[in-house]
Image 1 (cartoon, rainbow, N blue to C red):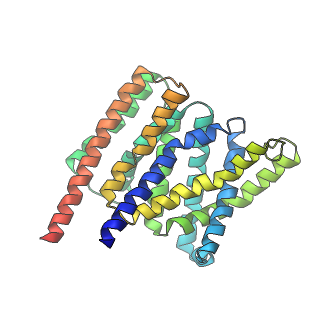
Image 2: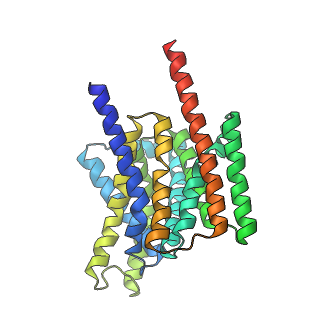
Image 3: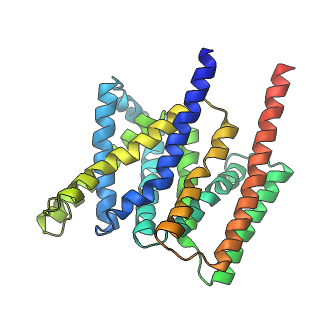
Amino acid sequence: MEKSKDNKMGYVYAMQAFFAWGILPIFWKLLSHVSAFEILAHRIFWSFIFLAFFLFWTRQSKLLNLLKQKKTRNSLITSSLLIGVNWGFFIYAVNTNQIVEASLGYYINPIANVFLGILVLNEKLDKLKFAALLLASTAVIYLTIDYGKFPWISILLACTFALYGLVKKTAGIDAIPALCIETLLLTPLAFVFIIYKIWIGTSAFFAGNFLTDIYLILTGIVTSFPLYWFAKGAQRIPLSALGFMQYIGPSLMLLIGVLIYKEKFRHEQAIAFGMIWCALFLYTFSMIRNTKRILKSKVN
């Protein structure tokens, strides 16, 4: 009974995380009058403040021990740079009316994970996953040729987040302490940038707009809570379920971009998205099938 309740809460946590990530473009649009670099600086700074308070409140104070280990420290430095770049480009994409292209990046991300698994971790692909990888790669090539423009935002978002996931997987550190250190490493630069903008009089912070000040402070909370929910969900539900649910986020982004902000959904984008969705179906089906085989073998 207790295990079943824990499992249900896992799905609730995961749903909260992916739904929050999916509707995040609406929040960033509230700050569309602020430059992407300034938003990024505040997102890093306030995320660190919030996470540090959260870890202090929950009495998790082993951050310095993590930094003392050379391998762990190098992994955290790398992951902090990757997540900083990813956040920055996502904010830029939203505030320059490219939400649809950003959503494509997060659809491509699972396929990028597979690609990195082959190259770096020497993972083997079954026929379905190989077909999914081939189909997704074809979609990107088609979009580039037919659209006449390389989808660089999509590729950058997919690759930086996939590399971030790879570093996190090999480092093996809990999500919240790791993100706290990642933001800690970037916070000095972010803080200097915030102070510099205020000093020269071009900052949106403390510029007389109270709502803008509140939104910039809230960037820390809207960043940290979904990650916390994701970490809690990942501990409680099967990886196959988590993998399937991760498509909720980019699907919501796509709908928000097209229906709310009236971004164009071109013919070539529709074809490319269709190919990506087919690839994701093959990928997810393969993952669920393999998970069932592993569970069945354990029972037998």
